[in-house]
Image (cartoon, rainbow, N blue to C red):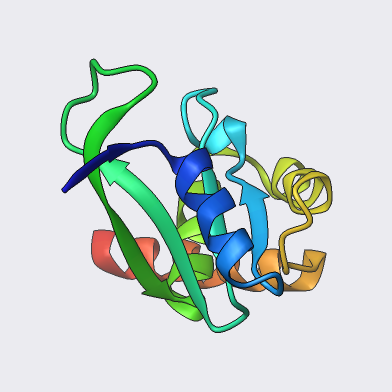
Length: 119
């Protein structure tokens, strides 16, 4: 583990590979806290830490996820926190790869699973 933060690690990744895209994680889904992640198009990376009290530099590690898993996790957080209309606005605001149809389909599947589990 090294002392760093998500922005420093994202910038280092961009310097090492100019094709990397650095993105801001939706504030509305992260308790209004700034968090950056980066992607090479197939894998999503972010720097995380164990101690939530540290502010700027902290001991942590870079984690990686398949792009589809990360996107599914974002959709899941949207489902649990915002309406479809708000999710569509978030997708546009943060340039997320979701259309209104994608979001509506996901919400329908989640609602169906929830109804089936409650029955």
